[in-house]
Structures are given as C-alpha cells and as structure tokens.
View 1 (tube, rainbow, N blue to C red):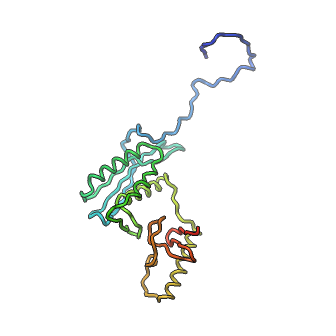
View 2: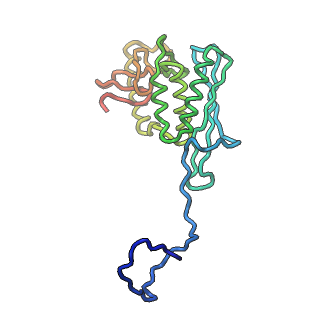
View 3: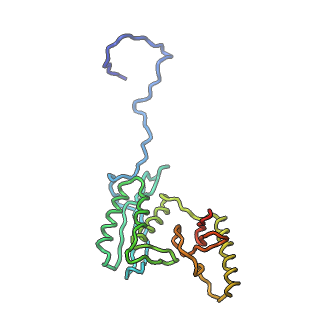
Length: 232
C-alpha cells in the first residue's frame, strides 16, 4: 500500500517484522448503514396498504382512508414499515378540494422522514366552528379533520411507530370494580329501570379518551373508560 508524504521528513526508524502494524484489507466489506425514510426514495411499484372506513355525521357519505406503507431494509434486522402516502375517497364531493390538498400535504410529510407523529397532535387539535360530534362508541371528535388524525394514529400504532397505551390487566380490574360499585350505588338510590347504559348519564367528558365517562368516585373524578384519575 502506497502513502503520499506531504511533509518534510525529519527522521525515520525501521520496525522489526513482529512490530509491523496489522493493516486491514483494502477490500474489506463493511455492513451497509440501515436505510431511513427520506424524500429521495423513489416510490416502488408495490406498496402494502390499509383502508379505514369512517362515517361522520357531518358528511352524507362515508369516507375511505387508504394509507400505503413502504418497507425499508426488507429481509434484514432493520426492516421497518413507514407510511408513504395517503388517499381519501368518498361519493361526497362537498369536501373534495380540501381533502385532496390535505392528503397531498400529509403524503409529503410521510416521505420527508424523521418523526412524523406530530401530525396526529396537529390534526386532532382542529376544531369545527359548528361544533364536533360523537362517533360510534361514544368518542368525541372535534372535527372531521380530527377523525382523520385519529385514523392516522391508529395506523401508526399498527405499524409500530407509536407504542399502544392499552390498559394493563390490573387497571381493567380496577375500572370494572369502580364501575360495578357505582352502578350498584345508583341502582339502590334510584331503583333499577332495566335499561343498561354504557356510562352513567351524569358522566362528563374525559380529556384523555374523549368519552363521557368521568364520574365522582371516592371523592375523586375518575374515568370509567380509560382509568384516568385526578388523584393519580
């Protein structure tokens, strides 16, 4: 191996054979760096996708949200799925222009790479000036854009970009006990009418799970759906 000497030689010494440094082979193959998402990655011919259906009361027809993922470092220990593009289709044309604009912006953010989870907070914080609505299951949505954000959050949890914050077995058991105790107390006070509701009529909105499931229990405001409590 040849080296170019660019400085003046002021001295030298000769090394013995057993003192020769062990040089690495020039053609040594190094493990390639894992591929990360960036906007220079070209769209492959085939993408894996998921389609979600939503039927908000503010729209005459259902909306179908399709999110396609690109697989990076396929077949290696660094294999990951990242959202690459999003499409929203519907028979309704009333939201056509802003829906197309929204999907193009979101798709551009997907392809940009980096931490894209901030999209969820930005979309879910959009409030309709005419008021929000409750979707199936009793979850409050402040706007149609916020429900689109909740779908993206659900998809990111499915591909592993966001860790799911599901309740533990102990938390579920605690919530079931508190709910049973409350229902028993309410039944004794007012008499059982035979009608079983998802949550008590007097329940208020939970800021964490957006359901009307917060009641006063043991002197503390407690959510019967997600377990959130003012008293920790």
